[in-house]
Length: 217
Image (cartoon, rainbow, N blue to C red; front, side):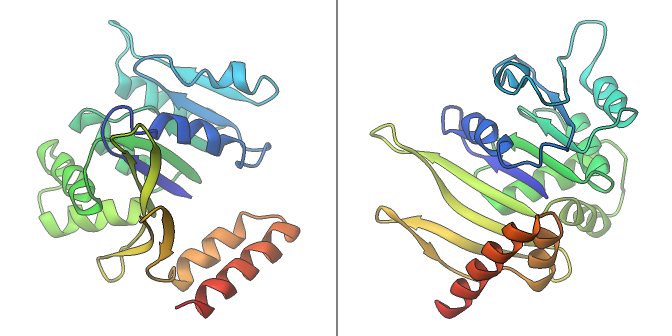
């Protein structure tokens, strides 16, 4: 799955990224980029195949991501995307990578797509706005909007599916009044993609979850 996490510094994006690694198939090789070393994945998961890259004065981030493409990596992770050049490259990589996870500071799903669309236009990768937007929406699948409350609690405020076929943002779950509420059901295409990546016993549990979601609609 290609997933992104957004909201301000300290809202739990990096913590969530680390937690989700435990649910990525151990056979998948991880390729990780960090502007500042804070994930420490090789220390957390010493038995996994992990390659971590950090930008230096002589090797920029774009070169690092291009190097990742030449290695046997199934899952690409980025601590944070902060420039239009890297954003444009991530959209390109999203067309070919099996799994892709990154963080960003956009305050909503539409603002996230807007940022990456503008990145493609400003870097010259695309000149047509509609084509650029379609490219971005095809590269992304799930957006998790993270938040930090005034009392310090950190949580996922919304889980949104990005649907390129209809150019819509389908909010699946929303956190309100201390609990999660189902808003809409995932598309058939997303469910099929999710099930393809699971083991048989996991597929049964996921199918049961989807069935329960449909009942509650």
